[in-house]
Length: 231
Image (cartoon, rainbow, N blue to C red):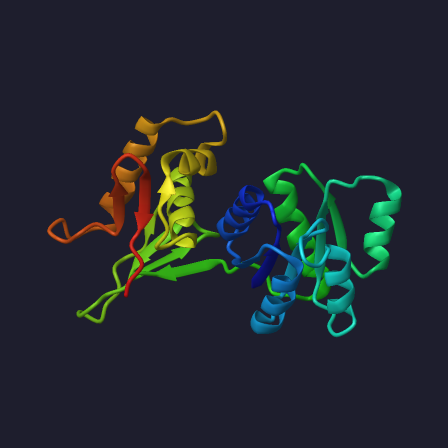
């Protein structure tokens, strides 16, 4: 499922995009109203998360133009919390309205609810990348065989190992800071860098059976970690 995130606040856009990718969605981002319409036509997203206060073309105008052509589900984000603003957004065609600030869990829950009502397929249960097949519903990992023709036996991951692998796979090829990973796995106050280092070590032991080959999880000194995306 592909989601277009339209938000001119770069920091908030990064948070929203990361939250949705971690939940298993493909994300495309735009930072103004005109770019939003261009990307909507180019990518045909399944759902749109739309800020109201946008440069070049405001969110309500974007919503109105999209609604005049398609029924793509739209969730509005806004600091405007009054009844008039909410009613106006819904009358112009939005499917839901979220007032800032909001929690990541609330955003994901709203996205799932709107997608379900619209009959849009949800996030995939199985992630596959770099020879790894990860079943998120079972916390089960399998390595694809390269030459033998036989896949390795599935491995059970602990809940923390599963959260780490899921976050890395959903952001493959990107460098994730240690703080970002700690927050994704333990919450804002639940872990530290030594705990993360030990967790990465345990996960590497499971996904890198060949100790002579380079690890799929790359350490970026002083920054964090990245899952190597195959060429």
